Length: 191
Picture 1 (cartoon, rainbow, N blue to C red):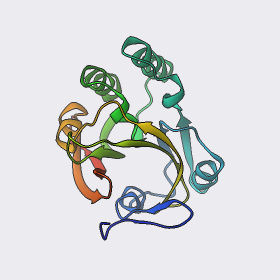
Picture 2: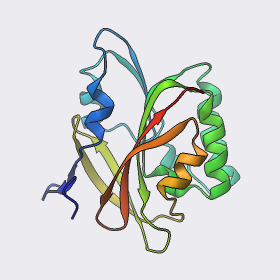
Picture 3: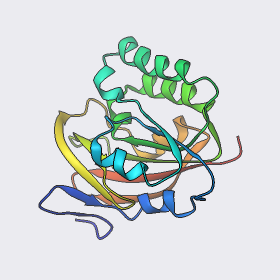
Picture 4: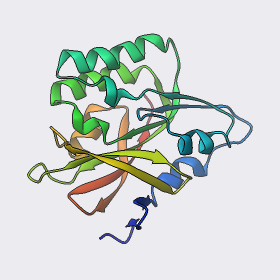
């Protein structure tokens, strides 16, 4: 197990990357957050400590094959208007998208980012091993609760692929985890 993350008996990940997203948050400024997960009680409590607007998209439930999956993501972005996200929590959602759908997701997301946007994601370290999908919930700035396993993810995108496709987000830091997984911190540059 990598030194940057530990899994305890309650199935929590302790992250060194996630705190970097919240470290520079100005408490006087209102945040906009996209969480593609289900928005569990723990995540809602955590974000209640910030002055923010959070969209819990729960894209996993709407995800289907090809056009059906991207239609769900497309509806989300259409409904958002001109919202620009400060923080995006992708969890391992990107590994459920085919290469073509990942490119489309990145294209749709692009107009909702700004030069200070940051994101967190889990990716495959290599494309050769099985990668089990997980359900996550945010406990605090450094703890992520693993709620359940979803089974194997259909696609395994590496940090290089994710950084290229989600431009202007690029991988600013990656930590190797157990089970062929990487934790990613992404940051937007001038776009």
